[in-house]
Figure 1 (cartoon, rainbow, N blue to C red):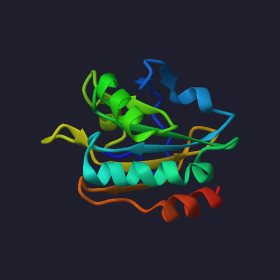
Figure 2 (cartoon, rainbow, N blue to C red):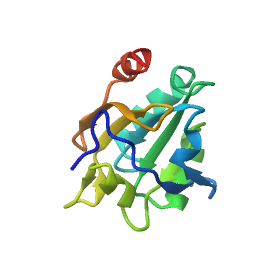
Figure 3 (cartoon, rainbow, N blue to C red):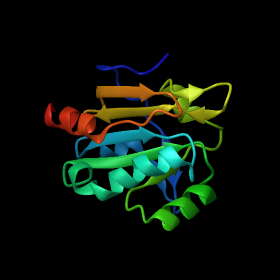
Length: 152
């Protein structure tokens, strides 16, 4: 079952592209979090979405908001991907146990073993305030993220 609006966001700790542990609860009381699940590093739609985030990063990563992007790829794959594309936000590896965080959020595609395109806006209290989920091939719109952030 997917995490919904009003639910407490499941806490997690994953390694980023530099091998550093990132814990969702470490943002509580400090920053809202835009949690972006994506299926695959180096895929066309994922690249377009994450490139768009990077190009508009000031809208989504600042003193009040952090961006965390999560895939089931390994830490080494997301490191190469982030370096190749120049991403300045954390790419987290939900590799082992494979897809556990995506599963906790209800966005793991069980037959394919990757995350659907799920985005969760989590407020400073750790509560989900907005969410959208798309199929693997369907891109999300950053304007929806902006509208959700403005409503906080």
